[in-house]
Image (cartoon, rainbow, N blue to C red; front, side, top):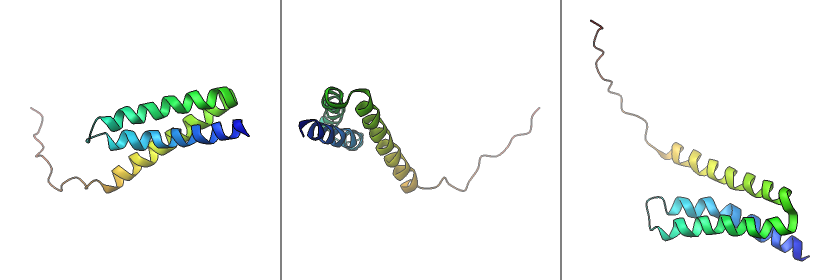
Length: 91
């Protein structure tokens, strides 16, 4: 039971890490420190209970969360303007 609780808490920290890092991107730097701390603590909790398998699952979870945040930011960003620079013919 203790191993399952460590795995669950570690995976939750892996999921929270990218979110905390995103909050600190243009905000207070304390969120960046908390994000990296969450990822390191996730590693520390998952490795003793489930070893490399737990670490692989945690890294996959963190990478998927980061990819989702990146996709959301890309979706929300405005499209580039319609004006283009004039093409200058080659000499």
